Amino acid sequence: MCLQYEQDEALCRRKNSYTQREREMEMMEDVVIVGAGIAGLATAVALKRVGVRALVLIRSEGLRATGSALTLFPNAWLALDALGVSHKLTPIYAPSSMGYVTNVSAGDVQQVLVRVANNGGDGHGIRTIHRKALLEALAEELPVDSIQFSSKLAVIGNEEQGGASIVVIHLEDGTTIKSKVLIGCDGVNSVVARWLGLAEPVHSGRSAVRGLAVFPQGHGFKQEVHRFVDVGKRAGFVPLNDRELYWFLTYNGDNMTGDPEHIQKQVLEKHAEKFPSSYLDVVRHADLSTLTWALLKFRQPWGIIFGKLSKGNVTVAGDAMHPMTPDLGQGGGASLEDAVVLGRHIGNSVINNGGLIVPGDMAKAIDDYVKERRWRPAFLVTGSYLAGWVQLGGDKWWMKFLRDGIFYQYLFGRISGLVHKDCGKLPAMSFGDMDHSSKKD
Ligand SMILES: Cc1cc2nc3c(=O)[nH]c(=O)nc-3n(C[C@H](O)[C@H](O)[C@H](O)COP(=O)(O)OP(=O)(O)OC[C@H]3O[C@@H](n4cnc5c(N)ncnc54)[C@H](O)[C@@H]3O)c2cc1C
Image 1 (cartoon, rainbow, N blue to C red):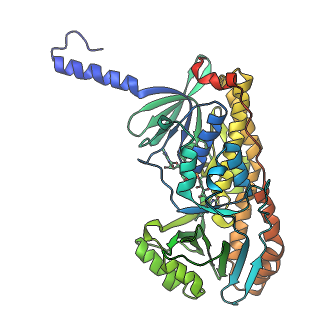
Image 2 (image 1 turned 120 degrees about the vertical axis):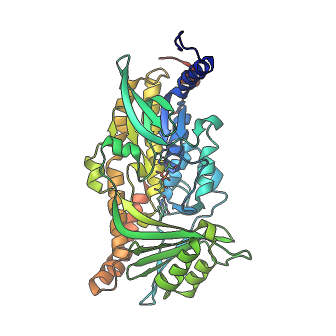
């Protein structure tokens, strides 16, 4: 309100409209998800399927798909089945039937049996897909106004309202949003994870380059995965379709700099110069606009096992909870699993409360989600780190023995057991349950 003795009417009007604007900018939501990567969008889809509307905040102006492509294993496809999204992707991307590992210095090629069967009921096998296609398939399941762009989370607070704890979310642009539930899907440098008190992710000492290669006339490769290992390096490529391949290089070190052209040059002339011509040819066909370089970080497994993964109605999912090195290709799959498990616990709470979000019960649902999830990502982080360590290990006799004699002969197949995990289904909602958003607490 403007005080009466203020003479300047213009100033008075400005002040009134400012308070009005401020009031409009303070919103109240049932669930806020920070981040619109795989974890954020999948969690919003899971919640929508159990009748809960979530507002997804993302700091960028549009959906970003850094990394161009990723490989999804059966666990990821089973989660996408539960989310009702897999059918949009499986007709476009074929499963890989076979894998080959070339030991660059020894020159020998091992055929790795893709033990993951590609038959029905097994999550549609192993498929490499465009990240953008996955994000779009998830995003189009959501109401248009449920994703809010240019909304960067800055500070988290909380307050009591009617005996219930409400999360107060402050955005960088000054907007304040109050919410009954906050789910941090804000990636490896998560603000929410920091607020929960989780230990910061650590550098693995490894880096990765990835991108797409485009062959306008067709690349001529079968739908098979080609991997290459050398001292301190691991690389590979796999077709996405007849014209495009996804390729990557992981190596010990953190010394890549420069623009995409320079990165491509360093891969060709420094890191992979001794690699077979098939790999070099793929890198030469790189679409430079897709080329990225990243330092690889992970959260130490004990930080996940013993860390505070939730506080009341606030929790984390995806890389915000369990950043891992990409050596098992499980970060995205684990994010999809998180979404289904969290959706199931929140959905059951909503069903049990007649379609309402009851803060006290929601805290229990979130705690149950954390209890169910905690151990598996810790195993995946450990397995991924060890898989990378063995593969990048070098050519000392004992490392070769570990890699070729033990890892590829016995462990690789067993680790593939981890990628069969079925995270379960979402609860079926009746029409009455779905109607909760119109009801008031
Ligand atoms: C080299 C490499 C290869 C990989 N290969 C595979 C693979 O083959 N298969 C696989 O399953 N996984 C793979 N992964 C892992 C996978 O990419 C990640 O686990 C997955 O993308 C995590 O998704 P996310 O949604 O948790 O995080 P992100 O994709 O990082 O999304 C985070 C989101 O939060 C937003 N955000 C961040 N901070 C804020 C803020 N303060 N306010 C608002 N928004 C914010 C970002 O804009 C973004 O939208 C790979 C990773 C790497 C590095």
